[in-house]
Image 1 (cartoon, helix red, strand yellow):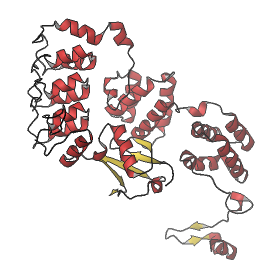
Image 2 (cartoon, rainbow, N blue to C red; image 1 turned 90 degrees about the vertical axis):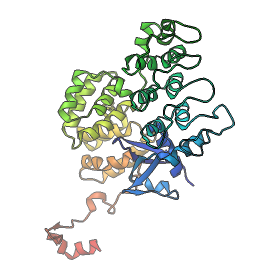
Image 3 (cartoon, rainbow, N blue to C red; image 1 turned 135 degrees about the vertical axis):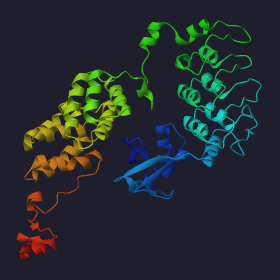
Image 4 (cartoon, one colour; image 1 turned 180 degrees about the vertical axis):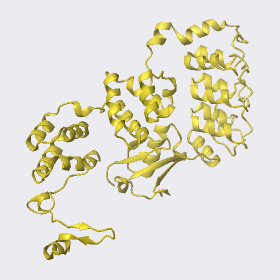
Length: 418
C-alpha cells in the first residue's frame, strides 16, 4: 500500500478542502475531526454513489468526493461505545463499570463533547431522557454537565430546545449551571447564561456554601483588559461571534453572500496584515466569478493558509521564466500563486521550461497547466514529437452534426488521426 493520497472533499456546507488519507476509514476519521462529528456519521459519496470500504483511495485523487453527515440511533450508540459507554438501547442507562454507570445517552454525549449527538437526541422523538438527572448523587442535569465542561455550543442547544425544562435546576452541592460555569472559569458559558431569556435564576446562591455569585463571576471573566485582549479562536461556528464591518457587508450584499460566508470572510480578513487591500482584491476576483459564494470560501481558506495573493510575492524562478518566455502579467501572477506552497518548486519550473520552449503561446499553456500544478500532477513529456506543441496536426473544424470539415479530409490529416 502506498502513502496517503490527497483527496478533494466537498462538505455539506459547500466548503471544499483537501484531506490526506490512505483508506476510506482514515478519510472518514479526518473529515469527522474537521466537522467535529463522529466518523461513524460520515458518509463519502462520488457521483451520488456511496463509496464501499474496499475502495482504493488513490483512485479518488483526480475527482471531488462529497461528505455527508447522517446520524442515526445505531450510529449514536456505536459512537458512544467508542468513548467507553455501554448502552443497550436509546433510553437505557449506561452499564459501564465505572463513573459513567447510570448516565443516559444525552449525558454521555455532553461529557464527551459530541455536539452532533446532542443535536440529534434533542430532535429525536423516541428519546425521553432530556430532563433526566445523573444517577451519581450529584443531581447534575445535561446543562450542568455542559456548563462544567465549558461547552458553549452544547449549552446553547439545550437552552434553545423547548423540551428542556431543567435549565434553572440546582445541583445537590454546586448550585445552578451559572455557578458551575463561573467557578470553573468558563466565561463563554457564563455570558451565554446571562444573555439567555430561559435562564431565570441569575441571582440564586449556591445551596451548600452560599457563595456570592459575584466572586465566581470574577474568577471566570478575569480583568476586563484580559478579556478584551483574548485571542479569537477560529472554529466551525466561531464566525457567529465576529462583528461584520460595513465594507465587508457591502461586498456581501453586492455578490449575494449569505450570513455564514460573510462571517467567515470577516473572520479571515481579521487575521490578515492588510485587510483593506485584501478586500479590494476580493472585489476584483468576485466581479469575474461565475459562483461568487463558492469562490469566496476558497479564498477564505487561502487567507487562513497564508496563500492568498501569494502571486504578488516575486519569485526569482518564476520571474526568470516569465522574462524568458514573455509571459503576460496574469499568467506570471497565477503561476507564482500556485507554486508558492510547492516544496519541489525548482523541479516544476525546470519541467515547465521544457514545455514552454515547445509552445507557440507560453502564457496560454501556463494557464492550461495550472489545474495540474495545483494537484501535483507531473507535467510529463512534451507531446507531439520533436517540435512539441507546434508539431500538433490541424484536425479541422466540425459542423453542427459533429462531422469534420476543412483539412480533416486531407490524407495526411487522416493518417494523423489514425
